Length: 431
Image 1 (tube, one colour):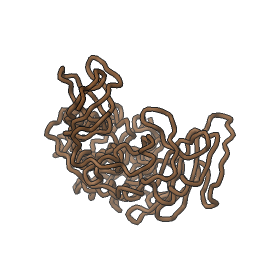
Image 2 (tube, helix red, strand yellow; image 1 turned 30 degrees about the vertical axis):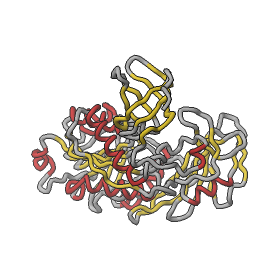
Image 3 (spheres, helix red, strand yellow; image 1 turned 60 degrees about the vertical axis):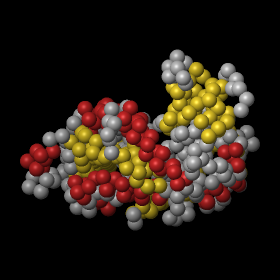
Image 4 (cartoon, rainbow, N blue to C red; image 1 turned 180 degrees about the vertical axis):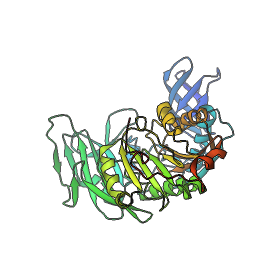
């Protein structure tokens, strides 16, 4: 090959890091981050930014491709769409690579080089998304953005979208909105659509099918493990029912015997009640803590049977502001930023022997693992899940065990469970 220009370099990719970029090193030792590559590949990369300690580059040519490199099948990806940034990775290999990213994050950020990380499972590679948040271009077409820019790339179809949403991507036109969100209940076929727009903007909708409910208050229903869940437009839900089923079964597995026998479970960042309705024992009580008004309204509906029996409380509060009560198990599913020190302190004050943490960013999860260790909770094991195939996103579920668990029975009573039936004990109060 011809000599390499000064603004480019040959690089050997060592590994992938959180965020999906490849990590390489120059001869000087400086780290270079390169998107769109795989471990072991040799590439020619053009430098985009360069600082003293690290640089960023983009691929010019792949000289030695990885055995798991494949050709992206999506036309929008070829036009620059950044929605599915891992279409160059063989779907069968994606979960294993993501588990390696989690191990690296725990090693570097949490200083846990020997942490056990299992590759748990994946949802189907295509057609799995029942929720989409999209941009719109000037002509009103549904779009996703070019990487690291706000430039819209219009879509004709979306290969990861549920077919009922792909139809909307193809036909609906929207003017005047910044973003549009679409959702379908795979179990019911219900569809909803809502949007964000500048104050006073005149939003025009065209070719919206008659069955589509409009606005943030529009609801669809999804079924997970036989439980019907109401999900409003403004409420968070997993990428689809397959993802919900997979993360629920993983939380139940990592919760172990303690969760199966729990008298009181705290469901922190509980959303619409996905875990509260599925993993809490039938004779147990659950305290769901959630800051979103929309999600709390949904959770009150979804937990109505439990609330009528006096076994559930929905507390509208940030986790940091909630007044903790004693619990047998805590399940926490925070946003991408993770728990952070204040929430760790609150949840540790429950003195729960077991905490199951669900994280959607490996570095945030690793940071929380360090904070939990300082609070007396040791990471027993973690499971990597691929709930977003064709993207770099990875879900992590971890089991944390509290130090000094032998004192549990003295505190909780003869069967290791404690009673929590009054409003105070069910966490109805807030700070």
